[in-house]
Amino acid sequence: MATLFVDKVDPQSGTSLEIGSSGDTITIPSGATITNNGTQTGFGGTNTPAFITYKNGAQTIADATTTNVTLTETYDSDGAFSSSTFTVPSGKAGKYWLGAKLMFYNTAGDLNMAIIYIKKNGSQILYLREQADSNIWYQKGINVSGIVDLAVGDAITVDVYIDHSSGTTTVSTGGEGESIFTGYKIIT
Image 1 (tube, one colour):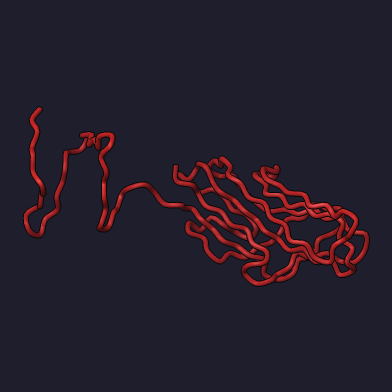
Image 2 (tube, one colour):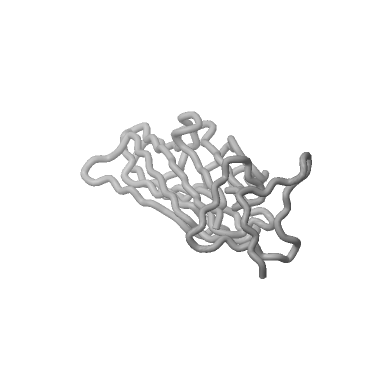
């Protein structure tokens, strides 16, 4: 093996510089630093699929019943969100960050408890329960998030369960920030 000592390698004008050939391994030794001052392609990965959804219109939630939350998409990189379900597309299995934040309103100020679930194929994988202590709520916002392993075809939904003594409880609209469900594939 020979060592070539130079300060700069430039391709011929109007061409690209190629280091190595197909099947070769290019090694950057420990302690060396790569500095990129230009545009990079083909490194790392992308955080896709990714989606952002929100509650578009108040949805009444029946007392003591688990209810699927209907959502409207704002952004869907891979066309994998439909109605109220994100389905992992082909070739996109892996670790995902998922998060949901919902705002609940009760017309009588009588909301005692709210639970938010993120479900995979109908079974809960993330949830958060908020219980009123001595006071009951007119409104309550809760959120849940986490990193989960998902396989191709897994169907992800957001469901809620509430307990109120009277009045009507809704998941609020609040525009694109008050009640949302988002997620993306993590680059590993």
